[in-house]
Image (cartoon, rainbow, N blue to C red):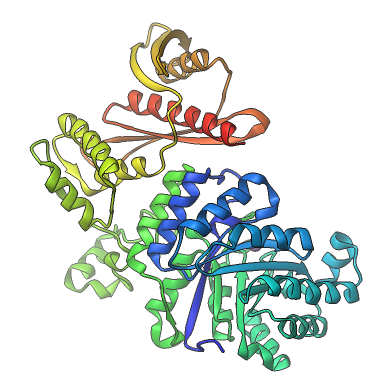
Length: 508
Ligand code: MN
């Protein structure tokens, strides 16, 4: 019997989110993200789709072994091989879950599955039983539920509950439903299948019409007690319901929804920032809750109101989502102890070695930048968190560039014991630098994306460069580099992306 007053947050950033274009993460990045999800208090982490590739299997397994504070699940199609692989990958979790699915809409059954409804019904029940032999925690999803025939859907749900499913997910797979309709859908399905009250009904909404969060909240009003979401709303096509939007909906309108949840909302900004840093994909500035402008008040009349009373234009405080002012905290005379203290208050717990490396980086930065802000520190630490083994490290670089000459770059990288130096011309200093690195690596890499942002304000701001390169088979690797010099930041980001490519190719 589930707690009727509590909504379970099921995070699928690492599965539905990760499978969308430009969002792929390597093993270390996934583990880092999973740890942050655990810290934020999600109830269930969907770690991946174990059967889909050896890499996926490995990362689901690693997350299952690492994360102890929440349920860890793997997706599986409704067939024996998928279910067995899912179990193999999650079995060492503190609380393992198998999440199997099969489509129940006429369209999907006929054209995708090429199965009759009767076959789908039988398969759903039989495969739920198979999963149940492994674990008591079995989730069944009726793919394309919102476009399924209600009589048939009800029958399938009854079948899988009888077979032992403890969570029944009814996804709006294609982002088709409307909020009032989704509310009625959950009401009606509970009326038709009273057994649903004894398990957890779940919603999984896509954002094709910009309604994923609205539909999820409507589903909760209609009786759903699990919401499937992703950080920053990433996911297939237009994405999934954003966890930050759904949970802040419940928090800000607590009296309206009247449900509890386990999410620590002050971890929202950090989760959002970590995902952006890992993938190199920023959220739009006006994105609800986590966008850069979500708490900015520009208009004079609004500012006046805010000064009189923040509630005039503010329904939630920046602090409630973990947004901190960029405080002046440390400088070049700050010692390791002060640095460690500041890290602790920002919520980072590093081991001795990580702390040492982060402190060195901090000292380097403080030498070049008078004022080191919290954001700078977080940038330094995030860099520590998701490092891969360094095939190449930057030795030195010389750039010659101007408005009347062709840019040239000479770069020296170290690989093991060897130092390799190459020079190249380019269309501007950064292009020249990237071409010189390509020569050292001995491959022509395609640059897919390149951005530089200032981490904090001021003329000596830390530059945060992100590059995305395309390697063999069109695989993308995002790299990141920090420096007060934007060219150095760019070179470091490129080398970081190359190192990730080597790391992943070795892992495969
Ligand atoms: Mn989905």
